[in-house]
Image (cartoon, rainbow over all chains, first blue to last red; front, side, top):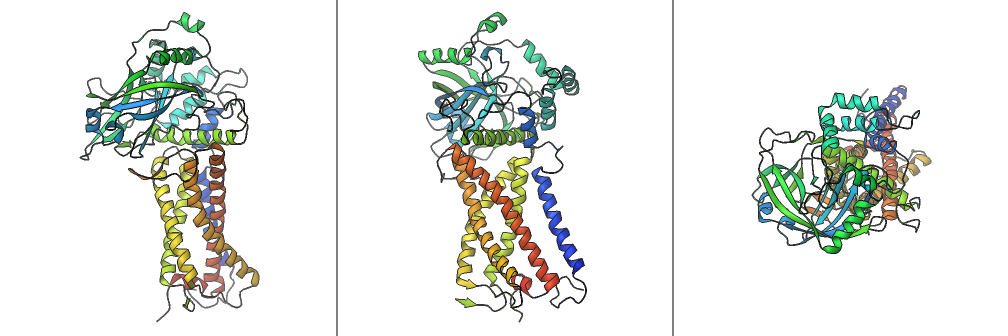
Length: 362
Length: 179
């Protein structure tokens, strides 16, 4: 009996057929497991997106998170200090065009702007060498949880209990008890003052990236957009009285007066800083460098705006910027892709009239 | 047209085994990267350049296939098995060619940069359009499952020739002419 013999087998071929079936069956099983078709209790991008969808009613064609927002356009002007830290063309080229999106947290595309604790800014910068940088930043200063598994637990704690129609407070309390950063996040949400505009809000990249200079030297960085518009607090009374689209209306008024600007700052990590954990803030005395200025000049509704069909995947990076091993970064990339696929399919099949304006499909 | 009685030529054999490894890797990388919360960045950075490499290699392979006729199947092979062999081989060639092109145009239609490695992007080959993206994205998954099923069928048949029929069909691809 030989595995590679060329003589006809006189004995029964059944053991050989069983061996072939075993090999092929194992390959098929491995494929199904990796695809998430079996062992479905694993935390996959599909399971995560399903959990986000379960936190509220379906809104076909809209982003699964940060569903309400506006498209914005403008330019980015890098600084020599930025160009010294990263060889990305965006820091050296004058006036890089920007397609962005300002939004509020949550899955409701019709939620009240002024009630959203989290605001966000997503940007797409395409430089003249064809390289592209996408980033999605938030108004919170650190991520609430350290890992994708914890993020999924936190998301699932927000799923309404069928009996009450509301999330079970005990589940959220359990997440807070388990993760100190989730408690710190709750503290931030309760105590940080609310600004009265998208324009005077800070947006933080939160995840760590690497800036790679022309000479090959690398720095771990986190970036933030700091507004040039002065901070003005919005009181709870003002928030209660604000219109549904308060932030968009207010931003439109500002744009009528001229460009709205933010300075982009990067904070450089030092040895030992938690570069792989977005729930940990780096010590305050780290070196900070202003790498550019963003000027937004126009705004469009997302239903027919150019940002609608853009997935602001934070791992789409130009030469000169690389990702880190921050596990939340990988998870965001995976879940954004799922969300994008689902909403683009809904738009394509004409099920997203609300998300695309009144024209039905497309 | 040259004939190498009983065996595939060296180019065909090298391309076959190299691409077998690449395509199996691609299929497993592909399903893993869309499901995994941890490994997507590493896997997608492998998936795109490997797909383009397969596209380039399949062009060489098709050229070689058309220049060099493969060895004939055994005369005693049942007609349905011979027909299945021919059909599945051309299906495999078609999918090897189509999958990278669909992947490339799908990324283009989704508005994604087609990154080969940091600093090198391929140009888009389709317009940024949600309906086109959705159709191509669905096709890329569906045809990947068809390709995986065909590869498994091909592997089963090859091992059947090797271990049950013992008719030299497997050896025609496994090694050259004996000296």
